[in-house]
Image 1 (cartoon, helix red, strand yellow):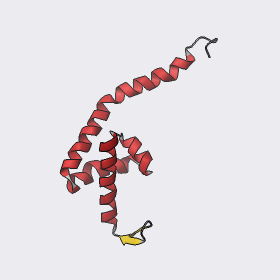
Image 2 (cartoon, helix red, strand yellow):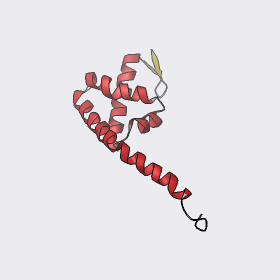
Image 3 (tube, one colour):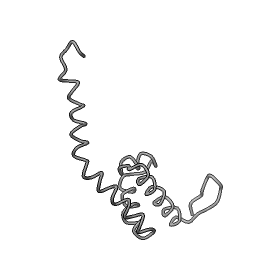
Length: 101
């Protein structure tokens, strides 16, 4: 049994996990968020987020699971671009002439 500290009621673990999975899936869809961003927001591990929104959501709500899968696929397709831009920003400062630093 898990205690819901907001209203003091007890919940069984399965109900808590299902609620968390639906909430995280909604967050990812609404914000087009990555697994990493969702994990930071909910303060849980990336592997837990991934399992919640892929495996558990398939059983809870297949339609929502499909929407989440599309967002995650889109993020994965853009990952190499974001990585390249981050590297560019990292080294842009190092390559500036000394007068501009």
